[in-house]
Image 1 (cartoon, rainbow, N blue to C red):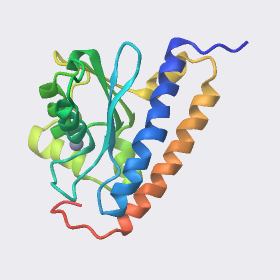
Image 2: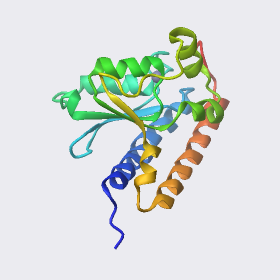
Image 3: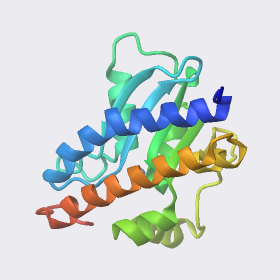
Image 4: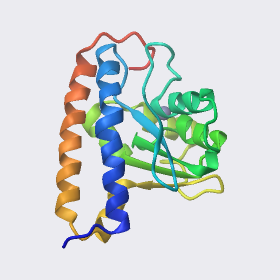
Length: 193
Ligand SMILES: [Zn+2]
């Protein structure tokens, strides 16, 4: 019997949340000119979804998926403690979100698509431009005193069924390409689109 190891079970749970909880919100958002980035806050112990969110820049350019998820998390009555939760981001957090996650108190961060893909596949260059222009670095320190930040695809080499993980990644990537096309064709009203 092919029993999934811990990394595999974690990976597939994160992909379930992206596909079932974040993508539907993102589809609504891109139709209104919001970018494709989404995020969720999840309990670390049992991987229960606390809040899923997507970019809300139709309301404010600061409402990136991660920041909006943190806002919604703190608005929840009886939310778990932040250090009991992990942040899942569909894309490697930008410099604003990387700081917001530290301010929010979340000790563990996972993301699906890295900066390189954000730039190449989605035609949204500001993440990397800002971090280089303003902070003179290429990416936030992934192992800092506030949190550790890792790519989900970094789990694949430890998996028993790597083909299944890669296949799932490609399917989600194709879905995001569709979402990105809707965004690129939508009417954008923000300063930086
Ligand atoms: Zn951001």
